[in-house]
Length: 113
Length: 109
Image (cartoon, rainbow over all chains, first blue to last red; front, side, top):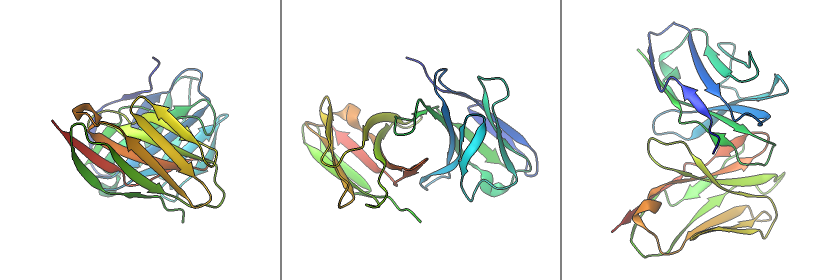
């Protein structure tokens, strides 16, 4: 069964550095998402992406965050200058259509030192 | 702010017991309600997407019901098995998913 894959599984970065989290969504899916879960808290929506543009973003998704789908297969989340509070598990998801199940990757654990 | 609540937070049951938990969500502007099963160190696995009031969906021993007028959904597990141990998340679907905190289920042999 097709899967959403995320790399790396764990990223450790110094505060202030840039990180890029990578995702390969399922190939025939059209909607792409990033979520995160800070330890002990709910899974939170960050951003949705459709037709090569952001369709919605949360308050968390400020100017430090950006997303790209550079080559039709990868979907990346960039954090320009990381802060301690960016430490979380970041999940990528994709779906065929809205109100269809979103398929999640295994996540990237981001640790900011 | 849209809020999704789940109860109980955690549940411990014996193998063979049936169990159920609740998800409550805003009853206005309903689009869809998702249920996910999330095992530790794995990705959330989609169980159901429910869209119609009164909907009931079933997958093996797991079933779910939906009441959009009052804003709740129940997930039932019949004859729980140790492999059912996981966190069960519900999520309210607008253009994005708004997740509840989850119900952590542990099934003891």
